[in-house]
Image 1 (spheres, rainbow, N blue to C red):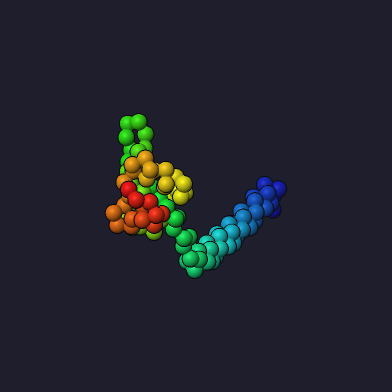
Image 2 (tube, helix red, strand yellow):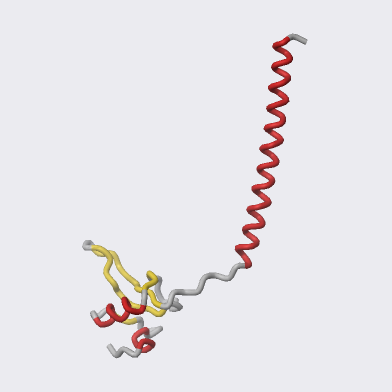
Length: 109
């Protein structure tokens, strides 16, 4: 066998070993992805925020439209704190007519 043939065989062996390594890595990744999906499926969803603000985009930026309790399903909203909700309600932002965040906070609007 010539030196050139020997080098070619060596590189083919390296290529075969790398192909085997790639298959091993792909199998390990697939197994871990399956395990992670199983763990995430068992994990309970995070609790809803206490309060959220429904807003609309305007030319001057977002504008608060309504305030909701965190578990209200009537509209999507951005999570916010109780002080921000109190401020918004005091500034005349409409409370949700379904979840009544103003009543929950003891604020009459």
